[in-house]
Length: 82
Image (cartoon, rainbow, N blue to C red):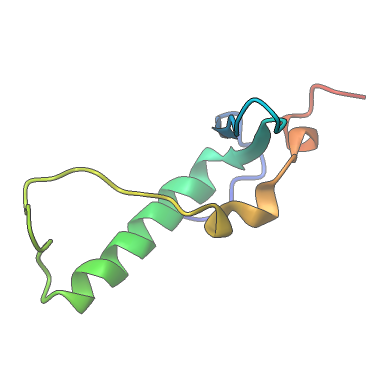
C-alpha cells in the first residue's frame, strides 16, 4: 500500500506490561500496518516455499514491537491534540 496523506484509520498497539511498568503505546496508520503485515508475511512464505509450515490454515500473524518502533507514542499523528 502507498502512504495516505489523509489517513483517518489507525491501529493502537498496547503493551500493558506488569503492575510495576507503565503501559506502552504504538499509534500506527492503517495503510502502514496493512502493508507491513503483507510484506512481512510474503517474506515468511517465500522462506517456506510459498506455504505456511505447520498449520497452513492459520491466520495468525505476530507483530514484534521492533517493527513498530517508529510509531511509539505517536499520538500526534491522530491530529486531535494541540
